[in-house]
Image 1 (cartoon, rainbow over the protein chains, first blue to last red):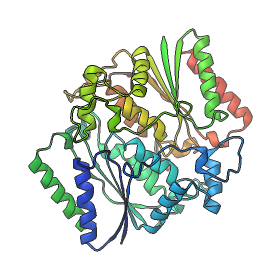
Image 2 (spheres, helix red, strand yellow):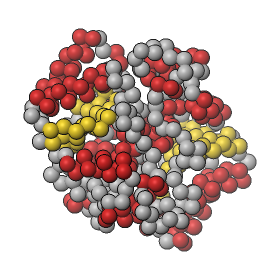
Image 3 (cartoon, rainbow over the protein chains, first blue to last red):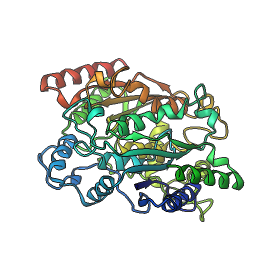
Length: 213
Length: 213
């Protein structure tokens, strides 16, 4: 299996950094091929903009939707987008690992989605039933994330509500929309107040989870 | 009333650009004071990073949560963050206008939230009941957004599900969390396939909505 690991955390020495290292080691132990997109390390530019499309169809007014559709026919995207698209095409499984910032992914990862998984690449926007015609059929996707807040806060009836419900705007409206199978999200709650021992336990649990994939 | 209008679209000549111009005119007609954060025009940097905190408490390992809490005591934030914080403090009402990109806001606006509405500024993270102790009590917030997809797709039972449910990760988990009153989101569906006449009608409807605020 070929795995693209998309990772966003600004500090390599963080718990998220350790999770990512654990994951890469486990996937390699499993014999999988792995490519990494470490968005902070790559200084990935998250801003969707006109220069993403070097061969503009309408140079006077920038319409991201139309330009993406047009560029998808000829692959006329900016080099950093093409590189990420190449990794996505190659992969059977996409894993997105990030810390929850305000009940969602950090901006740098949202920008990766905005710029890479564009209309014409991940889904066919000509039809509104893209759930049935998603262009990533056969691929799978999984979210791996940490929260500062404890699990109760992110559970049904808790102050924020069920985190998995909130994440449906990603797992359902992006991954399933594009035809991907969604693996259960892997969430580590209360990461900001974990002891060193608890952290080590969580790394080992995550390693075992990935060995089962 | 003092209004901060936070706006994200890459093309001034777009329908979103016209909505923003309509809004600014209507709010001024109403006699409100308005400040604008036009994130694309400002080339706002959406990436949360260590240099956001010029007086690092822990220079060896970057922990965004701890650094934000610490910086909030002395206002030791990067200049672009301080400027935005000043506008937020000044405002009674925050309006966020953006096109829906993948059932959420564009990365550049998510980054504004990640970097500006940090722990210690918008909410008190020492307590988990921040919903009752949010630091923006007395302020209100409103989302204004356009979708390419038609309303059916973003309704309950539709392919994506109810857009307002998805937006709760913003309206509930960010705005209400920080103590703000949430005004009903203003959504214009199917914006990508609107006629010129329909577009003009929508601008007039939006103008009237803002005159009622």
